[in-house]
Image 1: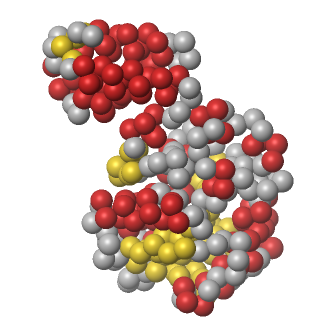
Image 2: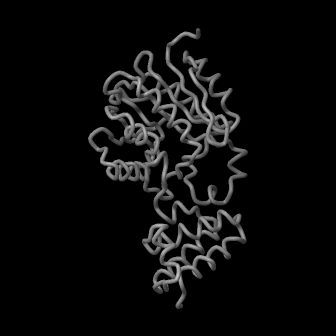
Image 3: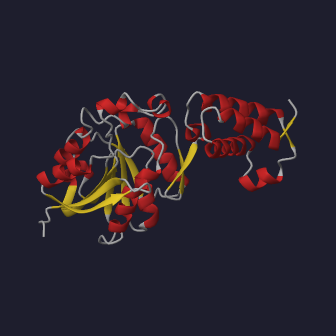
Length: 291
């Protein structure tokens, strides 16, 4: 099929309007064509009157079919940006979302005030997005990325290498539901975006999440709090005295997570909201008394 890039864009956008808003349809169409053609946005706009090669037309058609079935654009692109970092993503890891910038920002701000060469653990790390964001901005931090999934750890290692952080970032298989091994040593801060979707919420997830993202990174038990209880039970021992715990949580879970922290001798220092003004993260310190 002989078709100009501009027409290819309009046809793709029109097809996506069946399921997407006008703004999202245009964005997705542009992202897909740029990805398949290898062009950046400026080049794509400059070339809109040129004819697209057949392999580009076919590649866009295949990507459009995947989008129409509900597959997230991030998995089609194989890459997504988080906190200013491009990251490799596959269906073996959750897609990093803007919501998670709240916990990343809390962790970065606190880590900048830790003693020299702080040791930081990103537990349930997935793609490694939070730990790598911290390592990128806290230049002396020694970060451990930990996950139960070997496939997720493989992606985390790829992302570590992509950003040339191998000298300060390591990846290790760890089960958050089991007691922390003494082999891990002590950390100045533990960060986690654990699974927190409740049993009821799992049944109502959109197709793009339910059918494509890893359930083991989503399901947090009947009330969504199983991993918070386990982390407090199993990994407080891996914190140095006065160490910090920084957690993401789901919408409406803030009070329950903070109650668990206080029950386990943590002092809640700050609760943070995401870009949509929804409470999403908490920073707490172990052993410090409430003032």
